[in-house]
Image (cartoon, rainbow, N blue to C red; front, top):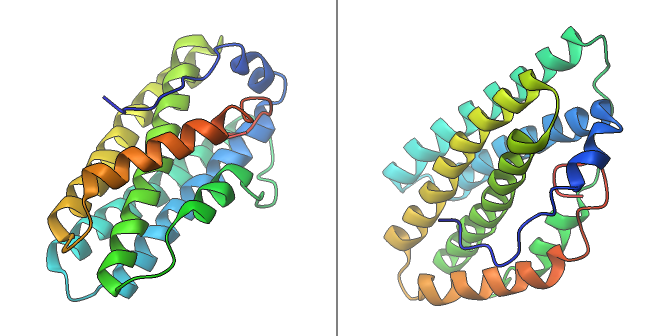
Length: 193
């Protein structure tokens, strides 16, 4: 369904399990950044009613996810660490086309967000199937479903609002690029690391 060309090696979960505080902190900040991205899209495109409605919903859900992760951190007697740089997301951002019209920029931003949601969904699936902690397995299964919904929303909106960009062609380019960089990840206890 996601169209990703490479899947995460399940052994990545062993790395995650070695430092649960790190994955939870990283995950919390990923949710916050996703909410911020949705708000950025609203701020740049207030005239698109359906887009604003959908991004408002996503921003709210992402902050709810942040709160859920923060609650898990507190329940386990852990602390929310400082925000981490996400090298995977930085590499994806480099691939975004920076030229073109305002509409072209919107479509790139939506595809960029769809790519992050797709990989997050895939990682949450790997966690839900392989992590030994049953509560976290259930939690990540629930979030996997939500992230899949966000991924499809971003792609749907890219197709709806595109004026000149061939969204299917550009999405394939995103998938190819993501496959070329994801091989360098899966070695750290972070969502995309």
